[in-house]
Every structure is written in structure tokens, then in C-alpha cells.
Length: 395
Image (cartoon, rainbow, N blue to C red; front, side):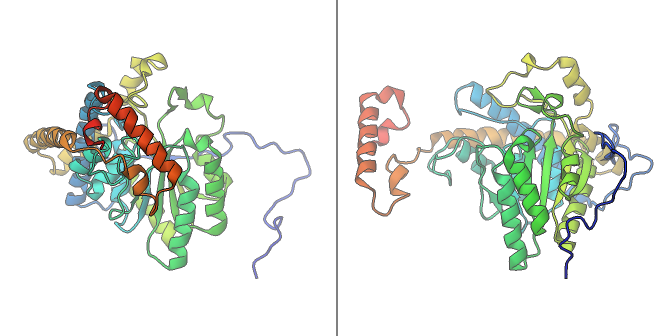
């Protein structure tokens, strides 16, 4: 029988013993150097040409998507957007190391993971324009994606809610005997939420096969990491909760792939949680509502531009003989054309009928909600110019 004595593993001392911050030096896995060459002691992960080029192509596509959608927001065509510039490797390379059966629970900067799984440009656009083809039926802000066939849980706005949910979902996978894990993405800012601590503790105690993937990108909106916590990043917290922990260079696609691949093996083989802290940097603004020039310098950004994950992987692919510059230029141009075409098409699709707000929720709509919908329609009819997309559909 398991020893229930919680002091069984505790050593003793007979003098006051202070454990100081930094006592444990947590190393960071790095395989690729910025010039695309392998570090001398690094072992290249088992990555075939098709998977490697798919990772690279997806990162290039996401950068194009981000650029176009920021532009669309500035033009007033969508209301909000979050770019992942500089962090593409963290989402894409980690998703590549998973099985399609694994559940992804995202925060809001992991569009690369969804694109890697096959989410189309049209699907991205329909969600961001909240039109009739949007599976969320316009109930979510832009970039709150979700896709059941691709095992990608719908994103929620509140920070950290997906963390305990991931522990619970992974526990269900374990109980069902599934050969699958759950990966949960979040930023270091979300790790300050209570849900982070509850989720990790739950996963550790119940031995849930979940990968907690923290993108430590240096800032929680405008708050730098050194003003968020005094400890050794987020990795040290995993150790404190008894969770197997890996720290990785989040701008190194090969290292991210290798770390996630190993984390998945551990989660399945030992039925346990694993925390990955990916050290990266958000080159873009936090969102289209943010201006990073107010809290960081251009010099700081330029230092991280030299560690661009896309450029780093391109150089590695070139050394492998897997990179074609002409083909890559065609890929980028095609991505731009596809995004622009899908954007224009999504704009033409009608928004969902007003009545869907209630009829798609209730079998029999309560009287008080019917009254509210009627009042809303009357308001729209009174001010049709303020609601150009909606007014024509109000009866």
C-alpha cells in the first residue's frame, strides 16, 4: 500500500537552513544556433523532410496571416487581432510533435498550431469576421478559434481558464484508456492566475497526461517578466508542484519539437503532467489595442529579431539541402494572395440572424428574452446606418 505519511520523503536538519531563489539552475534546451548550425553537443531530433518543411511553411504562412490581419484591423474591417510574430516556433513546432488525437487547449496566440493541423484560411476569416459561416455564430471575439474535428478546444477570453480544464480533460483521457494527451498553451502572465496553480496541482496529484506549455515571451501586455515574479521563471513552479519540467529555447524550432516530443512520451508512458517553459519574445504588440513603444525599446526588439525562428530554421533547412529560395518566395506570395482572397470573400458573407442569439440556445425562447430581441431589432431599425451589415436582415 502507498505510504500516506507526507513526511516520509522529508530530510531533516538541525540548523536553520535557508533555501534561496536560484538554488536550482534550470538549463534551457537549445539545438540550433542562430546561423542554423547545430550546437556541438546537440542531437538533431528525428525529423523527416516532409515534417520539417511543413513546420517551416506553416510558420511562414502564419506570419503572412498576422501581417494581413493587423492591416485589416487598422482598416476597420475586423475589430481585434493578436499576432504571434517571433513566437511562431513555439506553437507550430510543438503541434508538429503531437498526435492528431491529442487535444489542444490554446490561449490566443497559437494560431500556428491550428494551421498546422489543417485549419483553412477561409475558416480563419469566417471566425474573425463573425459571419454566418463562423461555427461560433458570431458569439466570440476575433481569434477565438475552435474546431472539434481538429481536436482544438474553443478559446476563451479570460486568462488561465483552460489550465485546470486541461487537467480535467487529460484525466478523462486517462480514465478512458486513450493513447492521447492534452496540451495546454498559456503565457507567463497567465501563470500569475490562480487557475495555473490549481491546474498544475490537480494534474500532479491525479497523474494527468497533460503538457503545460508556457510561452514566456517577456511581457504580460506591458508588464515585463521581472516585475511579474521574482522566481526563476515558470519552470521552477513546475518543480515545486512535483511536475516534470523542461525549459527550452522557444525560438529554436528543433528544440521545441524535441522537448514536446519527449514531454508527450513521458505523459503517456508514466501517466503524468509535464511543464514546458519556452523562452521566447513577442516581437509584435500584445494586440491591435497595444502600443509596445511605450514600454520597451527598439534596441531590445532588434536583439530578438536576430533570433528569428523562421530565419533560423530556413538556414538549417538550407544546410540540409531542403530549402529552395525561389519556391519559398512563391509560397509566401501565394499565402498573401490566398489570405487576401479569403478576406474579401468572408466580408461578403452575411452575419448571423439576430434571432440566433436566443433561438439557437433555447428550444422555447422565454418571454423576457423575446422582448429583449424585439427591442434590439427596433433599435437597429431606428439607426440602420450604424448597423450596415445587420439592418438589412432585421425583420
